Image (cartoon, rainbow, N blue to C red; front, side, top):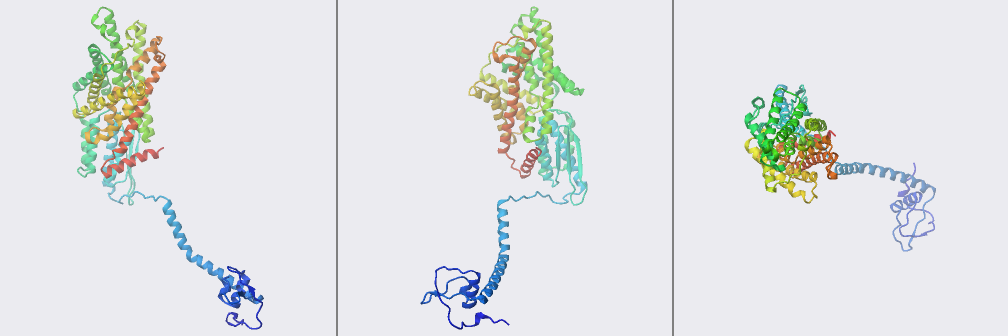
Amino acid sequence: MRRDVRRQPARGPQPRLLPAVAGHRLDHGQQGGARGRHGAHGARGRPAPDRPCGRLRRPAGRRGRAHGRRRAGQGGVAALRGFEGRAPRLFERSDGLERLIRRRRQRRTYPEAAHPREARVPIVALATRVGAAALVAGASAAEATQMILRLGIALEVPLHVDVTYTSIMVSAPDIGGSAPVTMVRTVPALARDYARLGHLVGIVDRVCAAELEPAEASRQLKERELSGMEYRRWVRFGAAFAQGASICALLGGVALDMLVAGLATVLIAMVTVGQQVRRGSYFFTQVAAGAIPTALAVMLMYLRRFGVDELWTLSPALVVASGMVSMLAGMGVVAAAQDALDGYFITAGARVVELLMRTGGLILGVAGVLWLAVRIGAPAYLAPEAVTPPHPVVQIVAAGAFTVALGVVSGLGPRGAVIVGAFGALGWAAYLLALTPVGGEYPIAAGLAAAVVGLLAHLMARKLGPPAVAIITVGIAPLMPGMFLYRALFRLVVGTPAVHPRDTAEELFMLAALTGIGLALGSSVGAAVGRRLAQPTERVARLATQIALGRGRLRE
């Protein structure tokens, strides 16, 4: 056996001493030799303790160097074992760093098997009926989705929703091994009925508050669908007359102009109701709606030509423009823009196509009658005249009266009609205030006024009662570019030279289009800001709103 040299005292003559150097480190052989011959200080590469001579011993020979190499290997193994001991702590630190950097993703969970399949069927049926009724009444796709998801969260049933312009699909996935429940409901032709939309919101609130069972809620919704509009027909026709007369007064018409414009709007309402009863095409309804006020104006001009002197104060351009504004007010500009901003592009695209078709039908009706009037020699009587706008107070009152009448036609109750009338007057006042700072640019001023209406509508809708989409749609109706559109059609059909460079048909069409875009964007941006500021106080409603808006963005 090899002897352990560490325990043996040094024998023989002492080697020559080397001068000591502070901080001197030895290589592996020297470390081993020093440790083997002189103890632990040599192995650590440290200088020996200070001696009177201040010198270190010389490293040992070949035998000491070999032993030093073995000790160095043992030291490396010990260091590796020490690293293995510290490695879990290092990995724990890296996991903590990863948790610090990365965002924790929490999955939304629902209680498993909260309802068996038989109990989930009425819940899915109610959610599908609610979504379809909301779209028909005039709600946007995000609002319909929010109502459906709110019912699912409140009743503890996870729902997958797919909302398009013509159908709604609601599915409750399999939970705990049970079969899924999926229902599809087609959406009929959209007809604005904001009173029904408000009633629908009330039913959803009661179901989420556990005050109403799903089966009873479905029964009440079915009864509401069969009951029809809230007002009698003569009330709606009276509101249509007030609608035409007030918008004519807003544009600067006199009493005779207001009377004729009101009669033209009543005729348009009659034709529209008849077409709805017969389920006719909305395109031809718009063609008839555009042709009626224009044909009435042509007939009155010919009566004036044959000696009826009382008609000399009549302005046919105001009559036609009033009818066009009344029909443009019924289009879903706000809902189309809101669906596009919320990310429901299929529904937004369908609404835009319908908007273009309705506007095209209206233009076709007006242009067709104007073409006939040109052929029979009546263009001078139908030329758009320069009308002095009335006093700003008169304009604000007329805008409020127009929106009240439009609210009644749209199905709002008396209180709701008065509320939207106040918003209509507020929107027109905002337009008048913004007109001077923007240099008289009508599209910009109209867009700013629409943004004000959209913002305040969402901030105050839950306190006032009417749905926000009803307040916005009706509140911005007086700002529709009816006069610009009529002047553009007249320039295009008649071909008279423009007095001003911006009075050509192309410029007027562009101005009308920019006004429509400004109204859509302004109202949608204001509504988006107001919706973010006025989050529902109820947790379920707030969660459903966030999921509905997030789903819209994820579809992109």
